[in-house]
Each structure stands twice: as C-alpha cells, then as structure tokens.
Image (cartoon, rainbow, N blue to C red; front, top):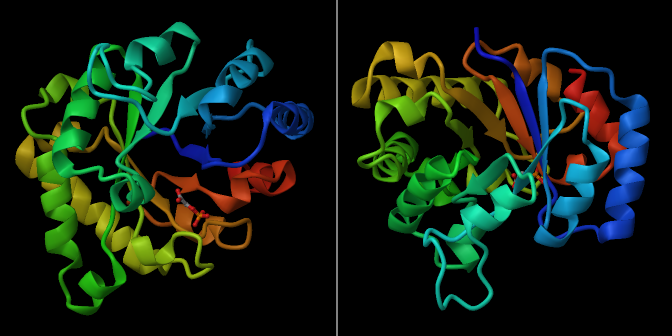
Length: 248
Ligand code: PGA
C-alpha cells in the first residue's frame, strides 16, 4: 500500500515570522494520521520549520538544489547543505524552474542523482503545457520528461521517488485538471516506470497531482485510484486550508 503524501509548496512566499505563525496554527489543528505531510519552503525558512516540526511526523522540503557537490556556483545550495539542517525532501524540476530558470531534463536528472546520494527524497515534477495538451501530445511530453529525468538512476532509488504530475495550465490558474484527467496521467506515469524498471517498483512510487488543489477538490482527486497525494501551492499558505487538504 502506498502512503498518501500531501506536500505544500510555498514558492517565494512567507518570511521567518510568518513561517512560525503558520507552524503554530498548523500544529494546533494537525492530528497525526497515516497521511505523510511535508512543507517545501524557501531556504531561509527551512531551519525554522525543521525546529517547529521536531518530534512530529511533518517533514520539511526545499524547492530546488544544485547538482554539484560544492564549487564556484554563486547563489546555489547543495544537497549536503540541505541535509545538514535536517531537510528531508526537495522539489526537483518544478515547471516554474523549467520556465524561468533554465532547468532542463538533463539538470533535473543530475539533481535527482545527487539528491538520492544524500538521501534527500526528491519530488520530481513533470507536466505538459496547454498547447501540448491541445495538440494531443501530453502523454508523449510527460513520458519523455520521466525517461530523461530517470536516466541511469538505479531501481533501488526509484522506490524512494515521488513524482508530481503538474499540468502547467493548472498551476496557479484556479483551473485544476479533472480527477479523470489527473488519474489517467498518473496511471500512465506508473506504466512508464513499470516499463523502465518493473511493475513491483512502479507500484511503490508515490504519484501526486498538483495544480490548483484546494479543500473543495482534494477529496475527489484522492478518491482516484492512481493519485497518491497532492503537491499544493497557493492553498498550502493558509494553515486552515492546508489542514483541510491534509485531512481529505
Ligand atoms: P497551485 O501550485 O496549487 O498554486 O496551483 C501548485 C504547484 O505549483 O506546485
């Protein structure tokens, strides 16, 4: 059985004070359950959140990392640095990084390898743009992203992988994919993993849906067989909304 996994993606929102306020409110509402919860925050809030969630099952994630060990990469953060402060997860290949920061399938692949090396659990984001869906190419696009991202990554690591299917047209637009569309693509991604590795391994991979997830649509999404969780942007900023999503 795959454990449901709800992760928040705060993007470039909140300062340390606001992160503390969030965690205080969230912890008052949070009841431990079999749902894995993580919050992926900006770098400067990570230590604060690790401290706030100490002794709970709530995990903390970053939103990006560099693929090199260390070096002259001004402005970058390594997997080692994240591990040192107690970060467990890292989003890799979010569409906003692909769009605005020249993230490619090749850098995504290198980052995944480095994350696994440091036992940072990656949340790999894939998803098609609107014009690609309109052209009927969504399955080809997502398949290519998955294959390139996982190039030469050993099967033993794949069991620790989370994949977030995030159609670009659904992110921050208020227009979520229908549960059927999301379920179909999550199932397709699982079949790609099964082809690359084995059905047994594919059955262990957590596959989330992301894109305008909110309290009002989480239940129908989570009722779909292939959807194991959600990557939540806007609605993860508010502790009341996020707890409703966690308690789908
Ligand atoms: P959204 O963002 O929930 O605000 O659409 C999701 C994401 O970008 O991960």
